[in-house]
Amino acid sequence: MIDAIRDFFGVIHWGDAFAAFVLLIAIIDPIGNMPIVVQLQDKGAKIHPTRVALYSLLIFLVFLLLGDLMLLIFQLDIRYFAIAGGAVIMLLALEMVLDTQIFKTTDLGNESSDIIPLAFPMYAGPGSFTALLSMHVQYSIASLLVTVVLCVITLYIVLRGTNWLTRHLGPVALYVVRKFFGVIAFAISIQIILTNVFSCLHGA
Image 1 (cartoon, one colour):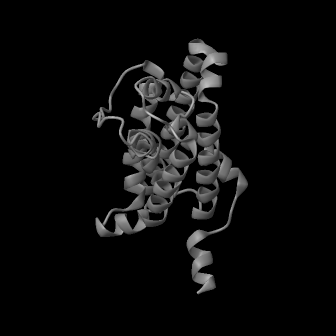
Image 2 (cartoon, one colour):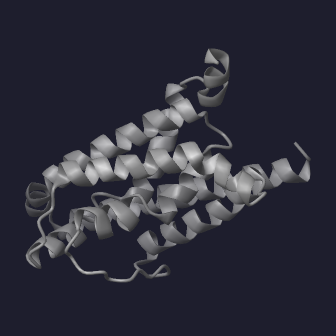
């Protein structure tokens, strides 16, 4: 039993965990999404950083641990999912870099802002789900668990300091940060796509 659990989770590789953290935090984009949080607050929504972080963590963990089961149910090779996921991440990165909207979401009001739209789909949404499953091809679940925890901690810190950061950084700095993470996400998406395309072509 212990060996089976160890085989499932793998070994933590801190370099992999950090590399995955860079991509996932770019997709979550807590700093770039601060204006949305401020807008919700201006509309009267009460944002609870602890709740948002915990809800996001729960959603991430469920999807990370059950993602393989979902692929098995739909009989999908994870490499093909990674290629499709890389394409989705690329489009998300283009949104960040080009200031355009490719993915549209429905406004469900602000009665439950901690869960919708913050925890889901803004932070723990389709883009981050796709990134986790795509990176699972390259990184162990143990490393990705570290990544998720680091991202949630970062998300919590940013949410706690949203008003202070918005006031001191200003719109220009937030704009630059969003562009920077967009370029990083775009580059990593290319790596995910090419790595898995070559893997499929060589039948590895």
